[in-house]
Image (cartoon, rainbow, N blue to C red; front, side, top):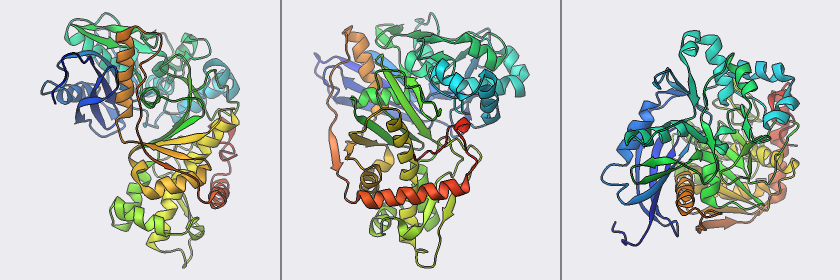
Length: 484
């Protein structure tokens, strides 16, 4: 695509669990000019070198020609360990590796319980967070722990590689948004809690400098490299979130988040009080299971997702009493890392493909509705839900979501919002302005609740099954009374 020579171009990178996506945008308007992508290897432990390989593949064919600034949005929490020479010690443990679940419980108790952690860093440790992975490493791989001098996050590592390629690397950096997902950087104090890092790892370790939202990490030749951030903070920036907006992301995993002006301080420990990429806060809950639940349903029925959408849309609300707890890969919210899925209420009447399809859709959304309710309990209003991610393309998902959430559901036009948010941050850093540039977000659909009573009944049934199946879940596990 040709570009007007007067247009200033910026690039944003989404280095996710599955792939590296790069978008090049007009810095003034956010219009996407060109895109590139490459796949990442599958797994919960992956060499960080694969992310650099994917980035270089995605930028081929002159993708970054004429680009003035770039920023990286990366999957959160991943533990990247480096030795004295700056070389990788082992494969990165990703956010979706649940090996450190026992470590998370132990760390929670060692500080004095969930309230102590909320007061310290506005979250309670779960297996996703970097600090718990460091405890696991110290206990299970002491030889690798002994070699570890520096710990960085996935977006930090890729930012460093971009700078190092041209000799522009001077130090490891991160930003407050991504650092707040480690459990040893505090949005309460706006600084590292090195005592918590030592508690997790058993000794001091070097960590990256946390940059301000529009502060550059450095220059790769003539290319300004912005601070970057975690994927959810980048998505919030890409969507231009305002108070009253709650995002429900239906990707491989699920996420529910909103922008907020202050620390959340959730006493139950359900809501992780992350920082965002603008200087505000990003209270968030995440699930391991979202769109993959629908893929599993389609595979079970031997159909594609289009047919699944049709079947679910034709089935009655509540699926005739058929209820799915969608914990197919364990779960983070509620914090049940070893749980499996449960299909309850099976009768001859509801043993049909349509009822099953509907139950899978409703189960996925009911678990996410519990996350929305947790935000509401902490004073975060929900005027509307912004539904993003692959599963948001489903007409039935949109309709059911409006009824279950009980508020209007807005579906932005499909776009790479993490990469777009990173590009917006790059434009911000390039401009030196006090606020990021205003970029429009086109809307694909807006759906009003059609039968909120039916949605409420479906939620009540889901809660009954959850309570009966997992009665011992507790506030210490970040799951008590998840649905209010």
